[in-house]
Length: 64
Image 1 (cartoon, rainbow, N blue to C red):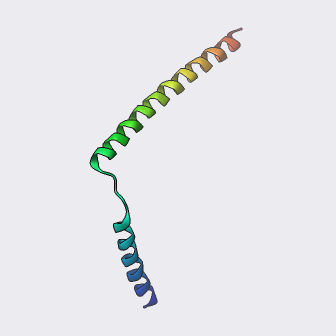
Image 2: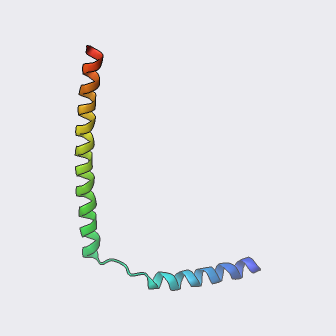
């Protein structure tokens, strides 16, 4: 029965800690989402260009 008491105590403490969390507003969440999407797009373009350039270098080495 110690396990049941432990779980009850754990869940109570978890509930108290979750209530202390400062959750972001909807506007903040959307702002962060846009930042993440833009950053991911920029990184995808950068890595795509890097991959293309690297491919060109390798092809020139192999063809010669």
